[in-house]
Amino acid sequence: MNLAKKYKQLFEGKGRSNDAALLTEKDAKTYLPIVKADAKLKQLGMINVEITPEEQLKMTFKHIPYEKRQQLYDTIFKLIPSEDREGGLFPIGSKIIVGFKSTSSSTSTSEAVAMKTLIKSSGAEYDKIVASVNVEDGSVSGRDREASGTIEIDGATFDWTMETDDGMSSSYLGDEEDDDFVLHDTLIDAVEEAGYGIE
Image 1 (tube, rainbow, N blue to C red):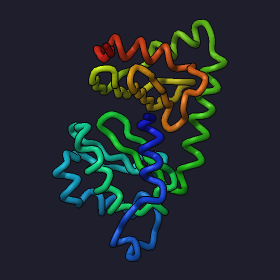
Image 2 (tube, one colour):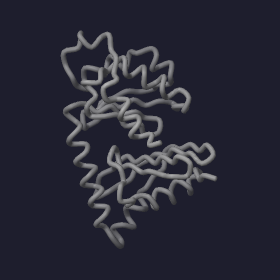
Image 3 (cartoon, one colour):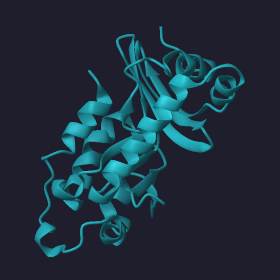
Image 4 (cartoon, helix red, strand yellow):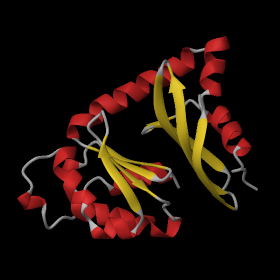
C-alpha cells in the first residue's frame, strides 16, 4: 500500500462541504480563517496554520496518531471542497500542506527539477546534499514505517517522506515519487540512524 498516493486519491473528488456554495474565492487566503477557527482541528491537536510562500495552506499539529488520521482528513474534507484542493495534499510528519489550483504546477516543477539535479550530482556536490538530510519525524510498527524531514538541493530546502509497507519502502520529494531510487539509500541510512529501523 502506497500511503502518499492513497492520501492524494482521498483528496481528489471526495471532498464534502456544506459551506462550499458560500465561498467565492478559491485560494489559501480564503480558507486560512476558516481552518484557524475550526474547533475540531484544534481538538485533534492543531497548533498553527499559515500560508506558505508558495500560497499553500500549512497546518501544524502536536502529533498525528495513526489511528486519528482518517478523522483528521475527513474534517479537512468538510472545510475545503475537492475542487479547490487540486494542488494536492502533502502529509509531512506533524504537518499537513494543502495545495490549491494556483500552486499545483509550480510545486511539482520545482521538485522535479530538484530530482533531476540530484540525479546529475556527484562527488562533493552529492556529499553536501546527503549531509543536508534532516529527519524530523518518524514511527515504526513491525515492518511498517513512516518518516519525514527536509533535504537541501541546489540551495533550496525540500520536504521528503518515506513510507515502508511490510519492508518495502517508497520515497518522495514533496509529491514527486523517487521512481529511480535516487534518494532511497540516502534516506534509508538517515532514517535508520535516527532510530527508525524496521525489524
